[in-house]
Image (tube, rainbow, N blue to C red; front, side, top):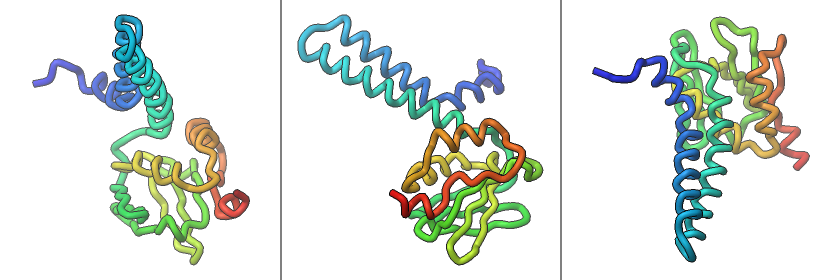
Length: 171
């Protein structure tokens, strides 16, 4: 028996990192204002770390576009694996050539990951554990995370290249 309605709980769960950062910042500010000396400095440090967690949490929340989509994503040792109901596969992050967003895919938008040898993996943005791809994409050299999040949330009309290997060579 739960005292919180499921839709309310889901909204809180979606913002979990940002809410944790808010709690940390609040506790840190309480220490920074209410104490003196070393404890005030520790409280200030905790408040700053909390603010950084809020920023990261907001980015992760913007990356989560939904749930309940087909298939499951697994990330293990720089290998992204998608287990779908009709198709699936794996892509190595070391051999990755490009990351694209296909907003017109049905039933939901898809991430299209292409390897250098031509292997292509289509992953729905609302697949189970698709939020693990945020860390994978953030680790790509030269990716612009803010650009990726803006494209994901703006629902463009055609396929958009988020990152490609040429950007890796430029940096």
